[in-house]
Structure formats: C-alpha cells, structure tokens
Length: 198
Length: 198
DNA sequence: GTCAAAGGAAACAGATCGGTTTACTTAGAT
DNA sequence: ATCTAAGTAAACCGATCTGTTTCCTTTGAC
Image (cartoon, rainbow over all chains, first blue to last red):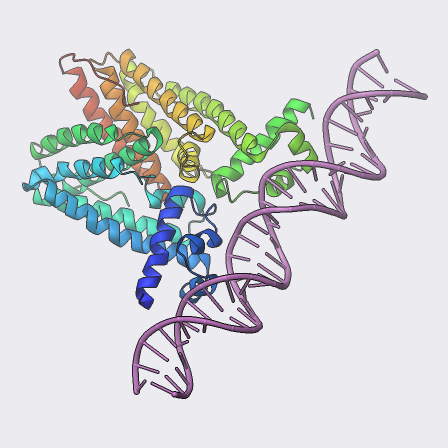
C-alpha cells in the first residue's frame, strides 16, 4: 500500500472509532489494532493523538461535504426542491447503520476549551454547511437568503441531534415540513436584509 | 455536613466537570479532589463511576427541569407568550458562563450503545422536554399541539447545539422567530391530528 | 545486488485509569 | 463516656493511557 494510502486508511479507521465510541474513549492502541498498523507507523504519520484527531476531523469534513452535496443535487433538480432536498439527504444520513450523530458536535462535547483546534474545525464545518444552505436559498430565489439559511441550519442541527438521541430518522421529515413552510413564507415576503448567526 | 448533603455535593461537582470536560475525560480522582472528599467516601456513595454518571444525569434532569420551567413561566404570563418564552429561557441558559451544551446530548456522543442506561436517561429527558412544550402548545390553544411540539422541540435542539458550537446565544432568537411563525400558522390551521416523533 | 526508508512486533516508560484496602480520626446518638 | 458509623489520607492493585525505543524484516529505487 502506498504511503498516502496507509495514512488515509488509519484516518478512516480512526473516524469510524471516534464516531462510535468518542474521542477520549478511543485509545491509540485500538486504532492501530483495527487499522492493522504498528504503533511506530501510526506515530510516524501523526505526531500525537491530537494531531490524528484533527486530521480525522478535516478528512471527515471533506468527505462529508462532497457526499452530502452530491446527494442533495441528485435528490432534486429544481432550485427550490434542492433547499428541501437537504432534509432528504439528512434522512438518508440518519438511516445509515453507522450514524452516530455529527462528529463535529460530538467533539465539541469533549473539548470545551474555546481555543481548542478541534472546536475551530467544528465551527468552520458548521459555517460551511450554512454557506451551502445559503447558496441553495439564493438559487431558489429567496428574498432573505441569510435569514432563511440561519433558520434552516438550525432545523438541520436539531434534526441531527434528535435522530441521534431517538435512534430514528423521522426528525428529518419534521424538519423538512418546517423548511417548506419557511421557504414559501420567504418567497412571499418583502426583501429585508438578514444577517449571519456566526 | 449531612450524609445526603455530601452525596449531593459530589454529584454537583461531578455535573460541573462532566459538562465542561466530558465523561471519559473526567476521572474519579479529579471529582474527589474538587469535591474535597476521599475516594473511599465517593465509592461509599456510588458503586462505580458509571453509577455516579447516572446519578449526575438524573440529578441534572431534575434541577434543569425545575429551573427551566420556572424561567419560562416567569418570562411570560400569556399561554401563547409562554410557547415563545421557551426560547427566551434558552437564551438565558446559553448566556451562562457555565454553558457547555446539553449534558444529555454530550453523553450520547460518548456512549453509543443503544442499550446504555445513559442513553435511556437522555431519551427520557428529551421526551420530558417535548411533553412540556406540548403542554404549552395545548394551553396556547394549538390546533395540532403534537406536530407543533415536534417542530418546536427540533428548533430548541438546534438552537442549543448551535449556541454550543458558535459560542453565542443568538441562535435562541433565530429559533424564537421561527417558533412565532409556526405558532401563528398552527392557530390559523385546521385541526388535523399530529403524532410524536419518538 | 545494494542500500536506505519504512514497517512490524514488542518491550518499555511514566502517568493515569477505576477501584480496593489499610490504618487512623472524627462526629453523633445513646 | 462510649461505641459505632462515616470520614480521611495514602498505599496499593492491575489495567490502560500516550508516546518512545529496540531489533529485525520488508520493500522499492538505483
């Protein structure tokens, strides 16, 4: 296996374990055992467990972003339909066998220090999601895309956590219903300027 | 100090540490040190760390429930105002120096086993919140209190997580705006029967 | 074929983990 | 005053934690 492929494999295994068991509960020994890699190799690729966590978060950001956007765009072709398709993509995500909530929410629960690099990655991930939703709102012709994106992002977040705790994907449908109401309300509304929440 | 008071004091310290640093990251040594209690005493009150975690969750459930409901009821006197006051109480909560997100969301991120007692406590906490919101909706004369409660609970959850990640309380205001729209829409709607999401 | 870089297995280090035990002290009810 | 229940401090247990080191094998470029 190539050197980069090995590194990616370690990260992939780490992501799975971090999502399932959390960050402090997942030891380096377990990651190397399940990745079938020696400890020396792991520490040759990552200077510390914290750096591996950061690399895992960044990789997950990239992978999730691509898969999620692809799903949304495949689920609907109309601009307004895509705004709502966010919640269909969410439902698919929640239904996955390996859904354990949002990795970026989970990491923030274990690292409360505001200056922690993990929190920085989480914030930027959520901002990326918000920008994506906003772009969908703009494409849909929203009068207040920023405000609408704030609202939809909140629904999205709530649906994730609710699905995680209750172990069902139905929250995605609830969120989608609200999203549809908010979208039609916005399209009928006068164009006042909204602001971002972050 | 009374025997019950000592037990409560340990739990209180444990809650603070679990919220701030997470569950796996908080060792019993640190809890006993900060509670100024010997290890023998701690294990005299709790058979294991897991039992202490459970006791902390249950205690937090009770304390939070009472404080939150009191806040909501103090923030508004009208039935419809109280539905929205949920988000004013949330804003107050998010603004607290010691706000580190929802303890019940955080614990689920560290214990993914569906049969874990921690997850059971989390589910029942969220169900309690949902029932409270529903009762407020009923009092407000909602046509579809169950559906409306599903929607408002989702917004509530989203506001919590967003406040936790971004470190600001503005998400409460966003959620409140949406809640107001949903409430007026419900009051103007025909009475179809909704269902719970859990 | 040779040589260097990388990997594997395992021992090792020092700290911390959850949890038990020992020996001694305190406080309260009788 | 006495006796018991509960407390403390600290040693101790085996396991696990992150991270390093040693020694030996593999592999790929030249």
